[in-house]
Image (cartoon, helix red, strand yellow):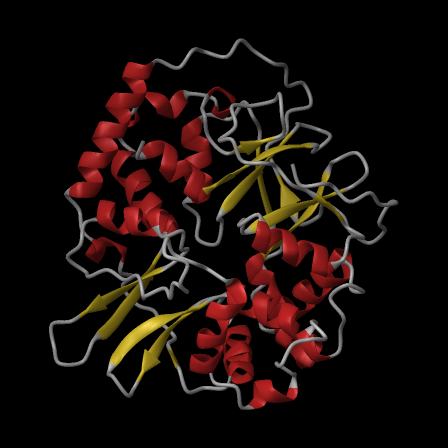
Amino acid sequence: MVPRFPASGTPGISGDSMEIDSDPFHHSEVVPKMLEADVELSRHRISLFLSTHTAYELLPESGKVVALDVTLPVKQAFHILYEQGISVAPLWDHGIGRFVGILSPLDFILILRELGNHGSNLTEEELETHAISAWKEGKLQLTRKFDGNGSLNPRHLIDAGPHDSLKDVALKLLQNKVATVPIISRDGSIPQLLHLASLTGVLKCICRHFKHSPASLPILQQPICSIPLGTWVPKIGESNGQPFAMLRANASLSDALSLLVQAEVSAVPIVDDNDSLLDIYCRSDITALAKDRAYAQIHLNELSIHQALQLTQEASATYGFFNGQRCHMCLRSDPLHKVMDRLAIPGVRRLVIVEAGSKRVEGIISLTDLFRFLLG
């Protein structure tokens, strides 16, 4: 279990950016038993649907996809993602004429941690000229990912074609532990980037298809507390076996980033002394530090999460990206279909499970958790 950080009350953080269908007269009810036959039938029908529909269905009627050249300086790439209001971008290598990787929030988290490391060879000035390609090579040493032979294991680009099935796309996302898979057409001489696929889009297709025949998926009415889905505070729900971590608002940003990297999670709930939800800090929030070069003026171990979240809200408001709601929640009694509908909303990658009224955190369900359950 990752330790929680004690703190005194934190003024200035409120639940105004959160909403939930709370019933003050909510009482616990007898939880209906989930039948294994219902689970298997539902999984079979979802699998059949995903296997017979292609990634073409994920492509929007209009939109833009931003790609970055690997020769761009890391600092410039950081600012482009911030200004475009996006958290990830495919990387294009003009020398070989193909897409070679993804620049993600994890890259910036590792860069900022490296900048804060006094023994590092990477300085803020070097970010002006340090190319993305050079950073990716250095990242192999930094993350120390080894294969079975003990050698450094570089990751290749995980992509999909427009004719690949939705199931193949979902499995690529799950098995490779990535949030995005580029959909690339190779019909011509030059690869064409069509879309960045995510589990959100795949789930939206599932919800749309089964919307008018919910009875065909018996598990949809099952309350989530009865399903082995998500990560729960011990003794509350059926956990997936992963440790559950929360942080106080006065913990340092360094603590939050270390937790995101070491626990391999994409977000950490921020709670008060009663474990009631105040906010959430996500990997993608790190791009807010590009505003006014904030990353060059702060020390990660001195900036609190509360202060970092204020920077995130200010940065988002500057470009009009902040929609007034950051924390998306649900109750343990909510049926699975309600959770699926919420997670199918663009931008909602996870739901924090809270107690009605007190908003005491009881667990968290991510898109990855949901698909691991649905695909068995």
